[in-house]
Length: 151
Image (cartoon, rainbow, N blue to C red; front, side, top):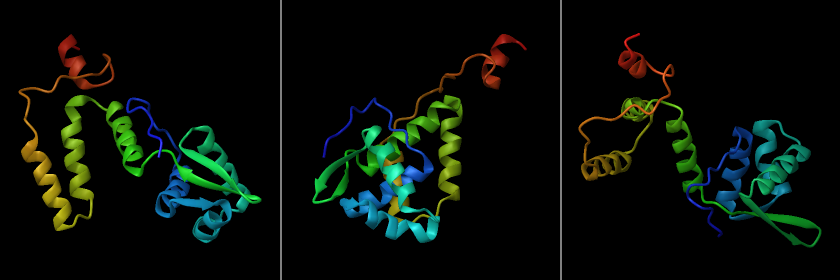
C-alpha cells in the first residue's frame, strides 16, 4: 500500500467515508460490490457509487486496476491515516487551549470497552503535561486574544 506523506491532509466527504469503509474492510473490491452493500441503507444507485469512486481516485486515496471488464479498487491510504488526518483537521479549527476539553468531551460521549479505556489511560500516562497551552488563534477568533488585547 502506498503511503501519503504524513503532512498531506486527507480530505474526504461523509459519503466518500462510507465507500472507503467498505474498501478498507474488503481490501480490494469493485463498484458493484460496494453498491450491493450500501444501496439499501444509503439509497444510492450504482452511478452514485461510481461517481464517489472516481472522486476518491482523483483525490489519490484509491487506486484502480482493471480485471476483465470491471475495475477493482483498493486503498492507497489506511483507515488510521485518514482518521488521524481528520482529527488533525478538527483540532486545527479550534483554539489549542480547548483541545483537551474537546478530547474529554469526545471520551465522555463515546461508548468504550475496557480495552479502549486501558489504551486511553496508557496514552495519558505516557504524556508529559505542559505548564500552559498557548492559544494559536488569530485575534478575534477566540476569547483568549480578546482578553490579551483588553477588549
